[in-house]
Image 1: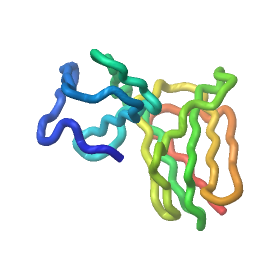
Image 2: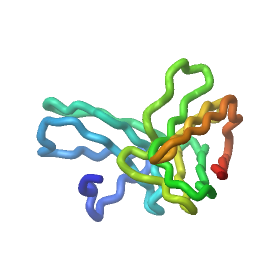
Image 3: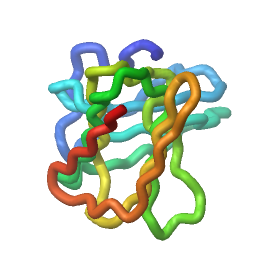
Length: 141
């Protein structure tokens, strides 16, 4: 994970913030709220020069994945059920260890497909999860 680019600054709802002097390269972006919950993530963003407009909103829908299994999870993919491809890995470079949970925010209510992959072998897929409000999915052995 890279350095916090805001420092002690807080971006209020509806406000904007401009990052300056970011060298060209490929970046993963993550915005967290003041409680540390991830509001939005984007992976593999190519910054060549100039600016990258990044807009997101807190729709009030949260998807919490609870790892009540005995294994660590390295990849979590979530996509609307209407998509034919999996969305980006929600963990980025993080690992969801046994006994921990991960919160995904900024989703619209609707039907989603979920793919969870263990760091070793094994995967789990669930289709047509009806996600709204504060949705929780628990991974078991």
